[in-house]
Image (cartoon, rainbow, N blue to C red; front, side):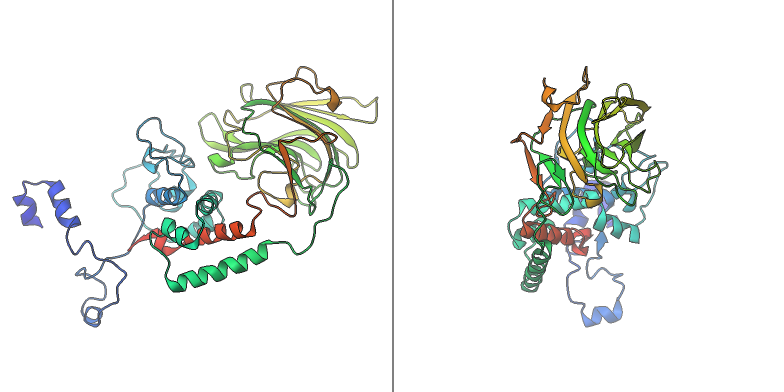
Length: 436
């Protein structure tokens, strides 16, 4: 190679072509080990086969997006967040807040020059890819674009499954589809204002595509039957899937704290996931210190402003004319992109089903409005004017649909859910992570 490099006029391009087109380079690791090779060169020093090599962090991220069909191939332009869909080479490098996928797979932090990358194998990597929100979202997206086991294999692994793999996949899908359906019929509730876990009336999900932006008001008429015995938050309304570490998780929720919350029980709070002043992803709890009593009807509202960095809370007990209106103005650190996540507007819970975070009690009306509301009104019949969402339990709304114990935030089809699990398995396979 040295002689050919010199004869080629010191051309690295010619040298690379010579190496890449050689029979040695184009070997595979998927071959039986010859008896002679096992004796003479068990460590493959003389390159009688290809040495398996794990993909770099950027390659793994791009491969996940390519398999799910989400990879944005646009070239140039401003860089994007690594939790988005652009190729890794066009993503923003935040040295003080590195992307979880990149960091776990040994991408350099960027503080100093790196002559050689490490290639570690750690439990943290496995936990992130098995339980992480971003890899799970890619698996669900992959499942949505395939209709068979063969297509899933082609997109994820780049080859059709073997007969044994097809048989194992069919058994897996059959078993998973059987366990995702519920054996017991959910309890029926009377009245559209009732929200309760384990019933068809757990959450109301909006099918609208408009978003409220970073300046909005949410108000509701609510009555809490019970709060969580641990620290979970009973959710009145939200545009949030419960995640805290990706662009897809950007969102907000209005709710009431549980018994063991560090913000004290029954505290009316907002939860935010957005960008701070340094464009880093931030999760923040904004407590009002206004506390609801169980079994009492309230009119609650929160005016959110990322421009002023404040949340103005309002709460008034209904049924007692002499009850005073309570207010609280609280500062927060989220500066932008509160409503740019992937979740829909939801009443009574989060975008992703989480029983401990679902409302237990009555929600008689909810309204979400861009900007502020000149005069808050505890009578939903008087809620007039433009609004992103207006719901009154006494009137049907075609833009909202119930989801409950007989459906989940993802697909309600057990076969689709099982296929998403299979896609998740494939995206965690060694054959996906390694070049052979």
